[in-house]
Image (cartoon, rainbow, N blue to C red):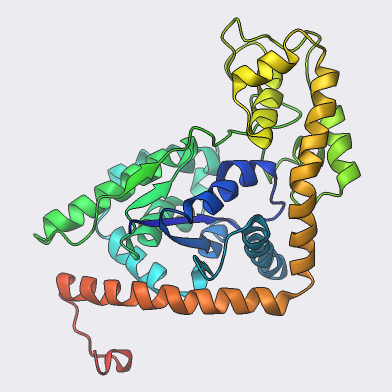
Length: 342
């Protein structure tokens, strides 16, 4: 069976975009793939994190996985830092990747901003760690959004260069999984900006743990325009003059399991207040149980930690032999005590 690897950063405020863009599809993938789902806490510290909040946020991501329907008996759920192979393999990949490749990574430029000289080295070499996350398990497929395509291409480049340099076919060339139904959810306050945990306005996003009345209020107050819901007769996209209109249609389509044409047929020509009212109902129906279960699990941190611990043990049994083979290929002597019996 083909193997999938993916992860979510524990940086707080898990929101609707995380659910529709990633976690919802994680559940579907369990039917056809061997799935490994990580809480990527090593990636999170490329920007400073409060230690106590990082622990809390790591448990929240794991709780959201479980609440959404990721089965820890069918899939592996763990936090990245619990499997040291990720960091060890990332260093080897730092020595395989080229500076020119990393200089082309647009995400670093965006996240570092104008003050690039003060960005962490970890943020710069983030793509090497992402490659290690994937290739430590010899994953064959990775679900990706638009903002991660470039990093996945780098993973492919690293695998190809490693194989070429050491005259081997050891690492697979991973393939992207792109879902037609994966919504690109934008801010409720600005349809040209992605829904984000870091947006200072909480009204810009619907958090997974929001109370039901809060979800309804945020949708009711979501930015729209004075025009009615389009009927689909003209092209509509995020680059159009009506980005907020597109965003609400996209969210309703994804939450309700409807095609865009079905949304247009239902609401075309009607005021956006009617679509918002129906969207609020669907959001409450979907996110209500998800939020309730996430909050319940967060009240049982010992249970979450058990799932993560057992998942890390299973992940280690897959990744450690891969790293040992890489050590042999590279030419490292296994003289440490941890190599006894290998």
